[in-house]
Image (cartoon, rainbow, N blue to C red; front, side):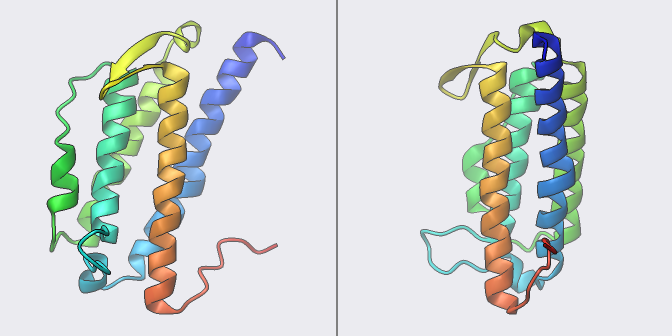
Length: 163
C-alpha cells in the first residue's frame, strides 16, 4: 500500500467510524431517554448524557473543524459540563450531526501530504493524524458511556450487534 493510499484509507476509516458507527449508536441511545433521563447525573462528579453530547460536539469542533481545518476556535469547554438542561434531545442530536458533517468536510479536504503537520490544539502540539485519532477515540469512548447509561436506565438490549 502506498503512502497516499494509507492516508486515504486512514481518513476514510475515520469518517466511517464517526458517521456510520458511533453517531448512529449515540442517536439510538439518546432516543431511548426521556428529557429527565437525558440530564440525569448519578452524582455531582458525573456527567449527564446531555453533557456528554455537548462535550462531544465541542471536542469534534475544536480538534477537527478548528484544529485540523483551521477555523476559529471558540470552544468554551467548561460550559459543556455546567449545562443541566432542559435542552431537547433533537436539538443536541442536530447540533452534533451538523458538527460531525463539518468535520467530515474538513477530513475530505485535508491535504493528504500534511497529515504529519503539527498544530496546537488546547495545550497540546499534535500532528493532524494525532488530532483525528483523538477525536475518533474520544467519540467512541463517550458513545460507549452514553449507550451504557441508556441501557442501565431503560433495561433494554440495543441490539447494535447481531452476530
